[in-house]
Image (cartoon, rainbow, N blue to C red):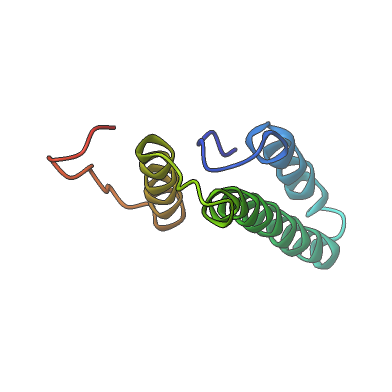
Length: 102
């Protein structure tokens, strides 16, 4: 289950974890299909994350195109979301730089 701000509502709910649990239970009856289903689930989740990131990037770029640069707060949130995603995907402990806030 992903509970980070870097994802959209579809990704942040428990549906992916619940589906993975069902796949794991199905492994007993059909290991090959369970492996395919698990792979498909991961691919779907990664696509959802990539789509959400592209949408957010588009919002920042749209502000630039309109001549109004994104405000510092929106840029700070974008960097924070990136840090959270890298932390999640790499299971690293990336503490914020001391000069940054949250």
